[in-house]
Length: 356
Ligand SMILES: *Cc1c(COP(=O)(O)O)cnc(C)c1O
Image (tube, rainbow, N blue to C red; front, top):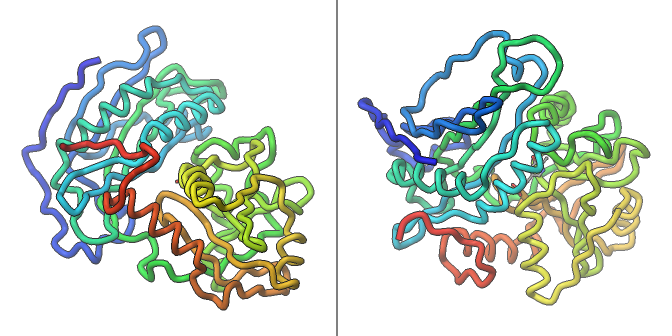
């Protein structure tokens, strides 16, 4: 499919001070759009000036949440090249989310090419400073003007771009997380494994109650027994117990993070033992009391590695690794970001260059 390009006549000023970028606050000059109409398939791929879109108030996505999204980044290397990290994995996961939400599949290879083309148009928007990147948000919404509950016949796929700084301005400082025992995020058979809007709106109240008590995020337990660990709001979670990395297995209610997958492969390449299995909160508490809980960290595209310094479960607060960044967390962060920003060799074949 051909991609039409319409360039803006009013380019915005690029941010002068890249230390103040924050996360997802400003957007670039252009965006990618593509429509789906039943009978016609995906069509009209185009790069156009960034701006508001027209949508009927009756558009189905606004009422029943038929939406999916992705999140990945483009990185600028020291020599000025721009590169992507495993974009094929993101588009593969987009199709898994599509399947769960009854949204028509997209052509993964075509979208990777479309994304590269969009980033080439916007290459001056990829920031230059250390720890900055261009955050990429592909998403699809159901656009039928109709209030019936059924899969839509018309969709809009968009890709928008936002130059971002480090997710946590404090950098790799450990975060405070509490184990959620009142609300649940997802259940097996639900939509937990899909990156879809409803999962996040369902988690806001819990997040807000955690924030009131000065906790950054919550750690979700399984929705049935409230016993097994699932993941954090937008991060997967790892526990280093007695030198072994343990992370909850993917069983339908957990999002299959690409950072999670990459961390597993990196740790295995070090010869470290990694277990993907069920892990209960009681096992974590026991490991803590017996002095075997070495490290806890979250993984996700936005924050990369997020060491957990305090983990609260009920009335009990576990201070992990003296509230300091652990050795494994630091080493993973260094290796992963080293590959992403092109500072170290990519032995895994994860990097997809955008510019030569
Ligand atoms: C996006 C996301 C993650 C992290 O996935 P990455 O591919 O590593 O960015 C983890 N959990 C949830 C719920 C997410 O939405």
